[in-house]
Image (cartoon, rainbow, N blue to C red):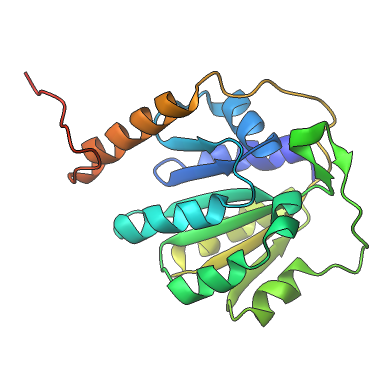
Length: 201
């Protein structure tokens, strides 16, 4: 399926979930489509840690669904993320692996993976029971409610075509992302994130 079609569908359906995007195409395309500045943590220079970062947020906010997007290039840097996700066993964590067969953060450099590589099989071998793979937009549309409703951990492989063009990164530097996102969690979750609270007056 087309990468942009896939993310447009997800952006339309993921209206209340907390979102964490990894570096490269995931962050760039989500920003391009949504222009969101609070509910999404754009984890630039994420070095394969998007789902683990999201896991910490899911642990601290058990009443909210937390969605992590990572690329297959990031996955290859740290497949051990699956074992951590299984160990945490968080019912509110949903991990979407965007398999576009290239490193989106380095100008779509081809990811030298054989067609035999089986991300679904790797997730199941790590002990994750709820694993999905979508290759067509119709299948994703039909299966997304189940993915989001069933308790996690849930691992979803999205087979997409490379984006084929470079999009700008979200125009937010790291501290701004951190404070916007943290204040959003405070405002919507009723729990402090930072030591210093904003004045309500």
